[in-house]
Amino acid sequence: MLELFERGGVMIYPLAFSSLLAVAIIVERLITLRRKKIIIPEIINVVEQFNSLKDVDLAKNICLRYEGPLPSIIRIGLENSDLDRNGIKELIEDQGRQEIRKLGKGLGILETVAAIAPLMGLAGTVLGMIKVFGVIKEQGVGQAAALSGGISEALLTTVTGLFIGIPALIFYNYFSHKAENFVLDIEKHSGLLVKKLNSIKSSSEIKNGAPQPINVNRQ
Image (cartoon, rainbow, N blue to C red; front, side, top):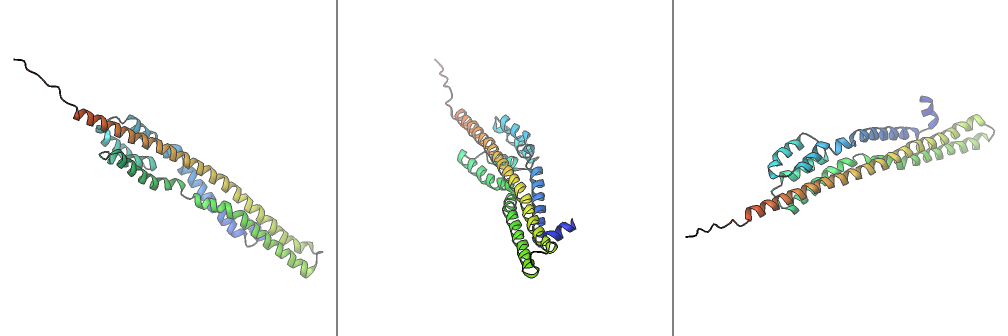
């Protein structure tokens, strides 16, 4: 490994750092963006089984047991169930924007690594070729041993940059697509909660405001 660093020249060090950074983000996102950890079945069950304003406290307590975007958004809707539909929807959207940012944590860095790793490899290639031409100028083209160092540096950094950039780009696209799907699922379930709350309150208002039957006592 030490020999590899010596042959790679100065650009091998930022390439090594970027590879470690990419691996750390990929592992963290693989652990964090598990479906059961984001779209929690118990929270989905809370939304689907919610049929009365009497269930608000129980539903909030269940949401408090879990962490993540979905329970936080559903809890905000339940805590403000006394507001009208537009008020609840606005609060859910505000909370959603804050929570959904967490789904994309680190992806900007991963995208940057995917973009700059091949460029750093290309920079290493250029530096290696500069060394090659410097040797040719001083010693001529017959010094194969002297030329091999610059050629090795040029080829090694290019390959290293591609080996880092290609997987980083693949995982960036994978995580971005996965996060977008989670956002759609969260919107679906939060929208269902808003719809149920509105329906329950409308039914309650109709029931409370319905005219009472008039009893006519005939003489």
